Image (tube, one colour):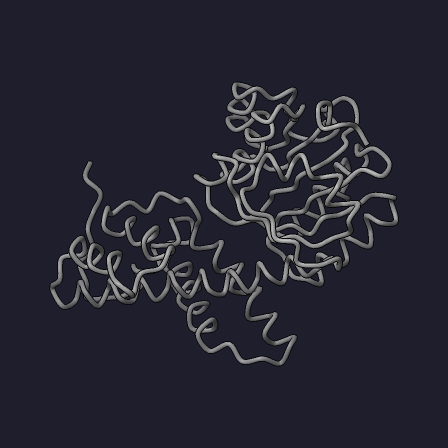
Length: 302
């Protein structure tokens, strides 16, 4: 494996989190390439100092010591890594693949087994923190994998994260922690939306309600972050409703597989499904509040 100084990294998926990770790697002095289907994102990364960028791995030259995969789900991750023209073929023997998509523990384990057959290391490493933390190189990583995988990806982890949790050696543990985290995140957003909708129905100005909660015991990071979007009437997607349809779907599937009841998660899942079905799937996940009838919500000023 190359030293940190000349480590060659490829970030697959230059969305809000992936772009932050990629730029953080560049800022840390790592030779960093990127892959994304969107031309605008590719150009933005070029302007941020990318060594190279392309729509597919086959359009990049040379091999990589390490890869970070930040696509939406397990199917996209598998395709991007092992599909036709996948990035696995461009990783040096013994190199490491950090898979940061939100996926089930079973999907993570299956991917790990397939990468092992190719002689590659895998770090099961979902992330959290949102676009702002990603851009600052301060994401939280919940990771599991071998000592060798952690060592190979140490310069990348140093570049992109302020906190790295080593959950264990077994692939799948990192993904399980992320699924449980998403249970809390989704329920907090749904509960915040319900509270703000009730305030609107009761005639309480939402900016006042927001100020009270964020300075009192009922606050949470998700309430403070997402309900500000409601107060501003701004549903530009930072993380979309459909993301939580996917993630809370994973949560409920995990509960079923473990024969464990998840009443709050199941209710939140139904709320996000209703919001998606109503046409709000691509809006910010705070748009789950729009499923409450009989309330007037703030609108973004033109």
